[in-house]
Image (cartoon, rainbow over all chains, first blue to last red; front, side):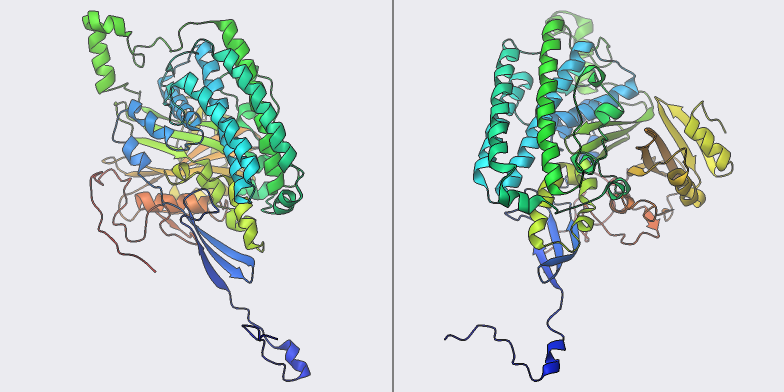
Length: 412
Length: 162
């Protein structure tokens, strides 16, 4: 018989059972680019055997000075940067920023524009949730559901491209409006896409939701309760999985969400499995919202999608080429952008990860004094160590997946 | 001190007549400017008072108003889930060794956000359990969101770390 590699020293007496065995804590570095985490973040995990004692979450690897850049350009120049915050749902960040600027300018956008904004942001939310659920399966070693999720996300992004002109960083929402209305044929194509996505979600559900391995990895892991969530300012699907129905689309409605019929799913336990179920149900609700947007937009028909306000509206191209006034206005708009009245404002929207806030301060000039993004990814990641105290190291993977930290938004 | 018809501000003014420097309501947002010395007392009241219940400290950030004196403002955004209302609390801080009492003991969410303010603005938080840089690395020189930090400034290269 072969000798074991690490033979246990023989017991010297009966009392030796009481001997203090090896109980030193071990430090494990995971990241900053680990194959089982989608996101550039480093965990310094303190382990007792296989159990987590403490995690030092180290973020900042994607820090690129978002706020500094915004504070050295014009208000318009911030919008493409907001696209790159959460690159899974770029339209939502566009929307948050533009709503905040419009608050300072005291602008109310036309109804058609508001419905288009809801449409684009719900498609964006769908893409974000699909990525979260699909990638979580992949990191739990299941390739097939990931492909279902990614196929649906491809369709979502194809339709975002039809609507906005770009798949990921669309720069679609502008101060005082959107870039343009729906292209011809969009509603029909979108309806076919909704039917196909429902089918894919059904397939996804069939292989995942009651899959023994998946359920075992998710149920009872990464548990957090409502009060801890609130103390850590955690919002979005994580908070809703604990049973608190906080959704800013219902609580503090913006745009036309008051007129839309949708439900806010909540969980009961606050574990990863509840978060998964909440996300899946939110995708179904999102599809319902998209359907209502299409009906309403067809009813409203074509027409202006920007507010008529010379401070933010660019003149029509045909007039720019032939009239002096409009040429000057175009020149001023491009080189200087709007002058936003002095003041400060905070606007929060419900992004795919939770409350996405923008706090803007203006001194009345064309350059912002302060552009603060309240990033849900960053704030939701903070209690991760709390959620995993005493858990197995393997539970870190699904917990991190369902926190859905997006490096671009977390590190800004 | 005026409450501008805002119930939360009214309640705050009644409880702390001496601790408030200013209040205003603009564009629907209520703001109270609080003296740094009584910040924790005020925050504690805002969190635990039955009519207010601000369970959530949504956001902490700072604004650099160079060349205004006092130079910095630390801005707290509070949200009450139970009452569905918001409040902005501000503390003004001077440029010479800026420091504010830490709110971590009241809301653990303040931990990372105060670390971020320290990292980017160099405003320290007295009583913070773990005040170190969060987005930037330890060897970074200066605090980049200060208005006198030039955007083009280069940082020294650091070698690999073990």
